[in-house]
Amino acid sequence: MIGLHNLKPQKGSKHRKKIVGRGVGSGHGRTSTRGSKGQKARSGDGSKKIGFEGGQMPLIRRIPKRGFNNQFRKEYEIVNVESLNKFESGVEVTPTSLKQAGMVKKAKLIKILGVGELKKSLTIKVTAFSKSAIEKIKSAGGKSEVIN
Image (cartoon, rainbow, N blue to C red; front, side):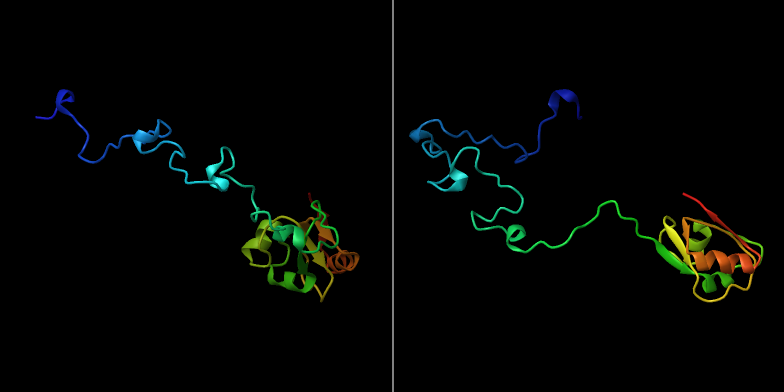
């Protein structure tokens, strides 16, 4: 019968911690299993910075850097006016409906451009419009609303 009084770990599951640096007679003295000399033998020098190449000039510093990368840029997904003819007349077109129709990948920043002709009157609510797109939507009898 198994009880708390007779439980013991499985054979080979418990290992004695290696004790180092306790004299030559222990077998793990003097260099304490670190070998002799070198970066990994020193105290505190075992880990290196990301990209460190052993003192050689790192790749990230060797390659030329050009231009400017604006981390605050806005990248719009573009939809042309002619592709909005896919929707029923009188429908409200939103970023989620554009995503469901497969016209955009993310329903975030979307800009409607005035390429082609719009034949249906739609209410379109997206982040941005071009001037020609606004004119074509109005001439088709629709509305364009900017959302954030």
